[in-house]
Image (cartoon, rainbow, N blue to C red; front, side):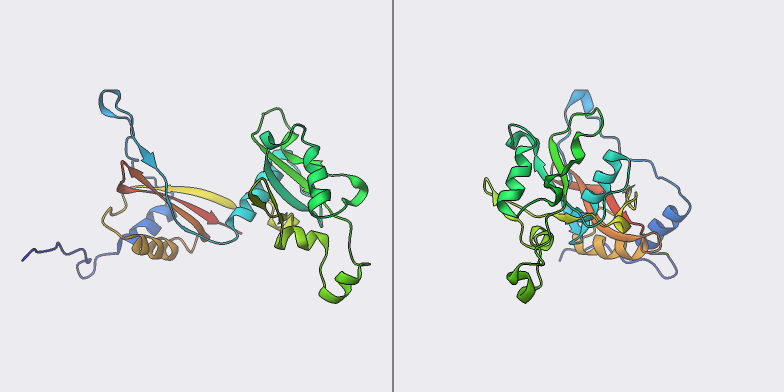
Length: 229
């Protein structure tokens, strides 16, 4: 009969998640695992997501947009993110929004990703659609083009695009990524998620957890995105 090692903590010993919380509270950073391959052999690192909340993409996009323009986003607007290479000129995306969702308020939009000098592969657009409140469809179904952009979105070149509300109270650097090392490598994904969500709850809400694996093997390194709102 094969005997399995006892992974339970001895009486009086702190759990691994408690150790993580103590280290985070003291702002101590354990030595990270070296990722330099021997004799120049490349490491094959992957970073699978084992947990994330439904709204993390929305929060990341709003935070990224505000950081690019170094200013607050406008009230009652929505944010779309496309690939810049999909358009001959970025204003072609404005026409796509008009065609798929409806007229733009003021016949204008703000190309967030074009601010600054750094070239970007993504095309981030802030827009506000004309209110459809005078439309009989809105009267009966309580909808508008802004809501349609967020809830339904549209399909373009086989990809579904949905807008994100640019609410000003979601702005700021409230999402922080924390790297943790030397976690027990024998833990299951479920145990990791439960332990990290519990031990880090005093510092924020755990919104995403990524494991770092090397050639498919987990060695105890993770990155955690905390919502510190």
